[in-house]
Amino acid sequence: MFKVAAFYKFTPIDDIPKWRADVRAEGAAYPELCGTILLAPEGINGTIAASPDHLDAMIDYLDKQFGIRTNGVKYSEAAEAPFNRFKVRPKKEIITMRCPEADPNRQVGQYVEPQDWNALLDDPDVTVIDTRNDYETRVGIFDGAVDPQMAAFTDFATFVKSQLDPQKNKKIAMYCTGGIRCEKASAYMLAAGFEEVYHLKGGILRYLEDVPPDQSKWHGDCFVFDKRVAVGQGLAEGDWSMCFGCREPLSPDERARDDYEEGVCCLHCVDTLTPERAEALRMRHRQMTAEGR
Image 1: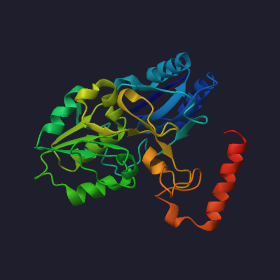
Image 2: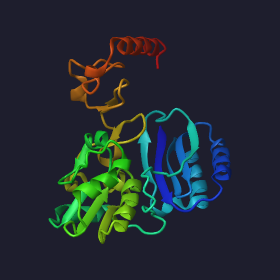
Image 3: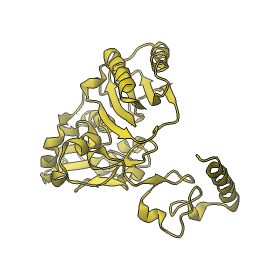
Image 4: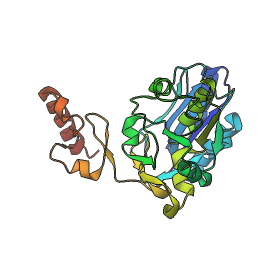
C-alpha cells in the first residue's frame, strides 16, 4: 500500500537549481518514492507517494524547508505505485497561468474551510466557479457550479474577461482539485477588480475527506493526475481508467461502449484515429499485455 500526498505552497524560492538538487538528494534516500515536485520562483507544488514511514519523512523535510503544511497536505492511498518514478522539475510557474498580476505571494482571496463550503453553494448571490480543465469537470462537479469548459488553466483569464463583471458578480467562490489553481485564480480576480473572492481551502480532495457523504454536494468523482485517475468520497479509488489513445478519463459506461478498444481508442478519439495510429496502438497493447504490465 502506498501513501499519497498532494501539496503546494506559494512562497518565494531563490536559487531553483540548488533547491532542485537538494530535494532530489533527499528523495534518493527513499527508493520507492515516486511522483513529481515542481519548483518555481513563486513556490512549490507536488504529488508524491511512498510507504507511509518514508512519505512522512519526506513531507517532514519539505515542510521544514518550504512550510508546505501551512495549506494542509492532502493524504490518500493507492494499492500500487501511482507514478513511475520520482522527479523534481524546475518551472517558471508551479501552476501555469501566464498572468503576472496573479501573484498569490502578494494577495489571495478568503480561504473557506470544507465544512463552510456548502453555505456558499447555497447562497444565490455567490457565483461558484470550477477552475479545472474540461476533462476534469466531466468526472465530477459541485452542485450549481459554473464550468468554464477550459482546455487549460491559461484560458481562465479569457473566461473572466468575457463572462464575468466585477459590478455584477459581487461574490465569487472558486474551487479546484487541491487548492492551488483556485488560490492563484483568486489572486487574478482581485487584481481584476473583484472585491469579494473566496476559494475552497484544500480543494475538492479535502472536501471529500472532511465532509460526510450525507452532507456532500459533490457529484461524481474527482480527477487526479496519477494512475488512479479519480477518487471518490473519503478519497477511495474510483472506477475510472484512462484512454491510452487520447488520455481522456473513462467511466465504466464509456468503457462498455462499442467504440471503446482497450489500449487503442474511445468515444473521444475514435473518429480522428488513423488506421496507422490504430495499428501502432494495437501492437503496443499486445506487447504490454504479453509482458504482463
